[in-house]
Image 1 (tube, rainbow, N blue to C red):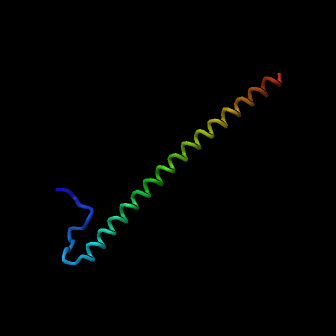
Image 2: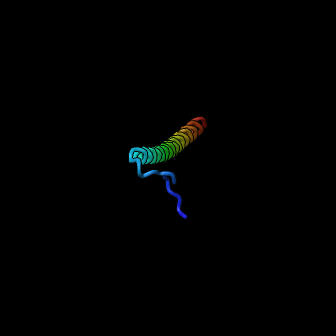
Image 3: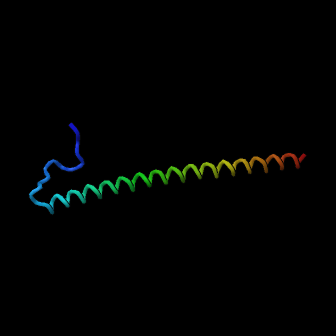
Length: 72
């Protein structure tokens, strides 16, 4: 038994209702796609931020090493 994204009570004798149900299904599909895009965007931002902090930490470590050597 497969599940349909449409309710089982679709009345085909009233075309306006069937069209409304199709539009609702399309809206739900677009909403899911928008949510997925938002999750992917958040993941990308997180990865970029991680790389940025990593570069900053490496820069700080190099500066600290130079300062330590200069203080000798």
